[in-house]
Figure (cartoon, rainbow, N blue to C red):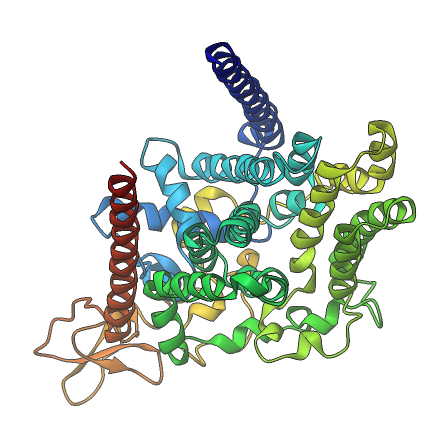
Length: 502
């Protein structure tokens, strides 16, 4: 009997050592892939196309405000040539904390930005590995595909979409939390992953709610209550960001988000596509690169993950009537943002598939070809980092309403200080400060002609917390205290059960 017990212990220890070796191999492979994708960019001419210049300007100021003691920087004082912008009252901050971690550790801001992208690449793969481990024979293959998936690379090489790249890294962790919730009724992991997704990228959080959370409600009949708890708790934890973003929307020029035709989802649809737009062509090729492998594999094996992948591709091509016209969904802007869900489904299939590896790689050829293509397409460098440091441009949706009637191009950036600094005078003892108005100043109001802060001569304005900030903070703290109380009760119950058994 003793011998059998020892044998079981030895077998368990052996499996644990084997699992640790597999995990170490996964970390090495995924880390090497992430370094290979991002490393060369550290030594090339800095990328400032698309969202890269925005990432740089925001990250530089975000880190500087953290260094000054602002735990949650919201107002960026250097934006718009020093007139300031309320960026992080509306934009989720989590990805920029990651950049600040490396920035404040001594890396230049641009290098810190690239390192953060590399970390997100690695985390997407590691989250996938944890999700697929124990669920199939090839978890590392599925995880590696998530790292090099074509849309994931597009977010880096072509779009510079820092926050969306971070959100993609969170999707496998949300899926893992949902699986644990279904199997064990433990909902804390789902709540934390959902909150982090909201605090990282709101369009991706909305899509995750529709294409992961809603299906889970339909399928998890015995676990709907803990799932509802997870969703409500996640929203409560993210209230510190959500409440100000919703309550203060009228104080920014939100119409700028939809001022161009290409910012409307219908612009990107397969029917009536604008083929003269290079990125429309690229977005359709991305869909094809993901849909073709799924279709080819579906012919061999009728797997639900492949069907889900193909359905997501249909949504990306705007082939599902009315969906992209729904009130909140229309604000996603770009339907191709849904592609990470198709890539996750295809990766989940790869991890579980029993097909020969050579057949899988052959089927994946369209996707891998697109991954290679987007990482090698030439991109413009519209501005230098030195010019960004001098002007600190920002995007039009963070201006006060009706300040400008067109979108901003960084290559032709207007001088917002012209006619404002030195500030023009106003009659009646009213002074104009050289900052844009936002309801965070201790006194004053918006000047209709310049959008600056107009204040009485006897008042010195300082930044204060808006009531929406305080409400958001209070709700998040209350949710956190509720979680701590819930955790403490569970621990006490376990101890009580153990004492009774003893």
